[in-house]
Figure 1 (cartoon, helix red, strand yellow):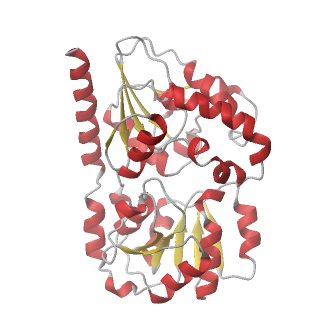
Figure 2 (cartoon, rainbow, N blue to C red; figure 1 turned 180 degrees about the vertical axis):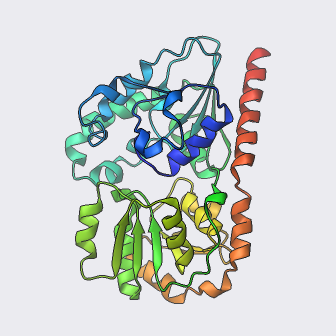
Length: 353
């Protein structure tokens, strides 16, 4: 918990479902997420003492399995984890219940070439990736029950881990947004700046369509993306506060989701801000966007395909009130009630033998 993004916001609601429970995490930065999970609840791993952990946390990947396995959770009857990779591997005492809310199967398992290769270290890292992937599949057998954020991820859990998973869509902090009217002449991307997010495709597609693009987010791919964006009408905003983010999204003609997402949280946040989304037609976006009602799709992961979708896109056909109503279906209160019910059911089944 040392950066701010969709997974961290979702976890804040997981933690909020059991407000008295301690939170265990490999790394924690109060400046980044202290308002989501207060420091008084947090127990960190030995990695918190490592130098430059705020900058080099990706380089510590080989140590994360050990960091999570080292937590002493023997005092707990019930453990609820939220994971994209490591937390599902925690060790609990015999007879304890471990319910894992899984945002995705680890990308170094099912998409290593694109996920790791995007940083230019794919070939050098292959032996390490194979070891981490083998640990990951073993660790995925430990939770009592999986809860996936989408049918897309549930299918991955079955394919790569051989496990069934309930489906509970991510919560959307709709109250952080107020519907805008899309009065700007630009499009917006809100994302971590990582190679697999395909922000490069959004930059090139908007350039071909001749429209301005605003990019909100931080990440290690920023320098490469800024180089690609030279000569285009692209503006990088970096990290912004909630009010600025709401204004940027609410003023856009539409949000753009250029990569294949596990769930597709951004289209729902854009809908909460009264704006539709143009998304690549794959992954979780197929579950969170209703074509023609809350957004539109482009079929090929190519700039020309996105540019064609932008040229034919008519934001006037999307009513802010209808978009907001779509996002309201994913309110956090519903998520928390459903997650608690799943955990209670799992505990009752374990007690029944």
